[in-house]
Length: 268
Image (cartoon, rainbow, N blue to C red; front, side, top):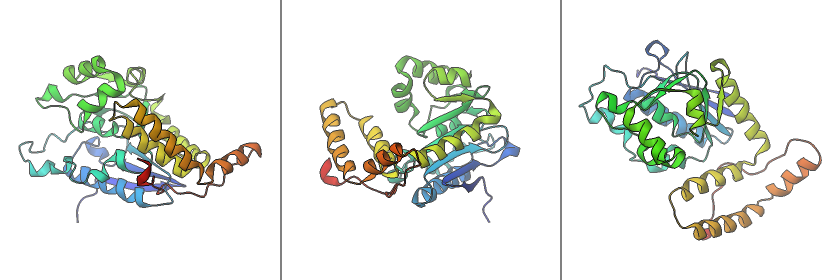
């Protein structure tokens, strides 16, 4: 039987994925990468799961690659190639929150950057440390970081591999919530629960899809009109009226769509 390096549990409508090698400070292995990918895909297919939270078991989120790996074995790291681009985290329909409960180094940090929202411990040590061990940054970080934090900041963090704490990480725009380490998972779960209750499943899915789609275009007019066409279609789903009614009546909305609602192809 394959050793479990990732574990999954659910709390209400939130799926929680743990990087689960606390005795090894949740260091990376190809087995962990495969199991994390599988967990995300399975939770994404579960209609009862509104939001996914990814965190580390114990005191660390993950301290990077297990140093016992054979880094010259290409086959061992094939999981990092997007042979199934439809299963990339940004292509999944479920919002993903990274609860960075402690140190996140190297590949562990670039995993966290695949999430849609990041909650970080103020005292966590974070480093894109790749160049310090003679390798280059991975998981699309050279594409993503300049778009999140600007070209200069990305150059600094990726070239120097320097370590920063959760406060600086947040100030640079790489996280939106910075709390005490013991509050990270609770904050992420509370955020997930609030999203599940207060935000329509279909509109969250569509928002995530368009946000990543527009990240890859420079055609502002096309994005504007695509957004308008999609907005007009979303209105036909009935969730707007349900949301307004709930607001007026000061109660939780009773949503009737699911996260698996897809934008009609003709709206492109």
